[in-house]
Structure formats: structure tokens, C-alpha cells
Length: 164
View 1 (cartoon, rainbow, N blue to C red):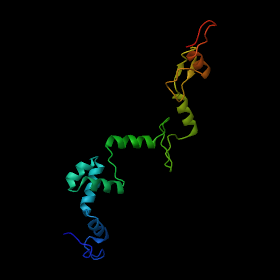
View 2 (cartoon, rainbow, N blue to C red):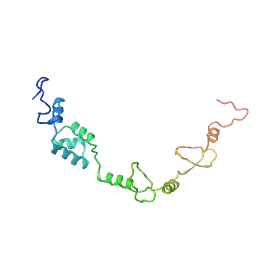
View 3 (cartoon, one colour):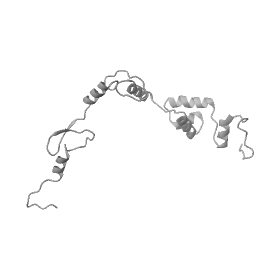
View 4 (tube, rainbow, N blue to C red):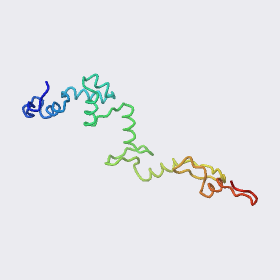
């Protein structure tokens, strides 16, 4: 049944309630409580929006909107286990972490420093002078310093040689 502007139902007396009234007004469908519960269960099992829509009998966009509004994410068992392990244990010693508002990776400063000391970037060899240097921040780095980089790229020419 299509409602004209003059024949819109009263949201208080309409059987769908205010949410149902809004859905009818905007041309959407009203989901039942069992459909919503089924969407929650299927999303928790890791199904896609399209698969859930086919099983529940609503459109893919309806499922997607419902999941976004209710913060329902598809999480597989292995991802859930990995996330829990990462969040609950210190990255260095494996000790259980205290739950706080911020996400922590280490149980203490000593563990943080020990972890970073053990997982330092590897030493690299300078392409110009052959010396060793830490390639912190850029693994593609070739030279230990600007001086070596400049000397390698712009070699000193002899007096009779003309630069091109």
C-alpha cells in the first residue's frame, strides 16, 4: 500500500511504532526482532552481507546498514584468537597485561626497551666507504652519511676532465 502525503499514518498509532513509521515514510522495510537476532548470529559466524541477506530475506544494504549501526563485525575464530593473544600479553615476556583505556604492548618500560634492543634493525654496509651503519627507518638506505652519498654520486674529477 502506498501512502499519499494526506494519508500518512500516525506514528503513535501505527502498528510498526515510530521506527516502523520512519521505514514506511522513507520507503524501507521493517525488520523483525528474529531477523535482527539472526543477522547478529550470522555476522558473528563470519558471513558476508550478501550471504546474510540471502538467508534472512532482506536486502544486502539493509544488512550492511544494520551491522554498521550496531557495530557488528565479521570475525573468524583464528582472527579472534590472534587479536585476543596480542591484546592480553606483553610482546616481550608474554606476561598478562592489565586492561586500561589505551592499548598496551608491554607490561613495563624494561620489557619495552629489552624488546626494542633485541629487535633492532640490522646493520647495513655503506656502498661508498664499506662501513657499517644502522638502517633505522629506511631499509633501502645505501650510504652511512650525506658525505658518502655525495662523494659516491658526484666523484671528484681530475683537472683535465670536463664534466658533462
